[in-house]
Length: 148
Ligand SMILES: [Zn+2]
Ligand SMILES: [Zn+2]
Image (cartoon, rainbow, N blue to C red):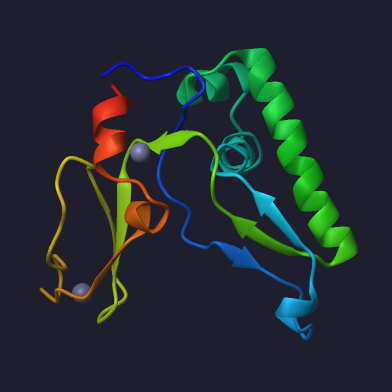
């Protein structure tokens, strides 16, 4: 199935989904939600150092859309740093290109394609795995929508 242009491509799920200032009780804090496409924009532009042109292509959106997206994302992160809000990552109209798993036993983190589900850790063979894409409600949809 072809990808809806509103659905952005996110390389892989984030490893961390909640951030809060140390020493403050979490449930008293205002929560800012950084959507997965906003997270990906910051990762590409500010962590990987991609030009907006390159980053917009990776996400399957126009350069001007990318610029607006990364500006919105930076505002949210800045606001979290200054006001001491809690930040959670999730939501957004996205599909992942690749999945990540973490083994609960040996803590090994590994990449995996989205067309198959892994049942075992490749290192210790434990079946106690965390499937990150599934944690965000994704899986088969990503494999069907994101064409390489
Ligand atoms: Zn393992
Ligand atoms: Zn998906």
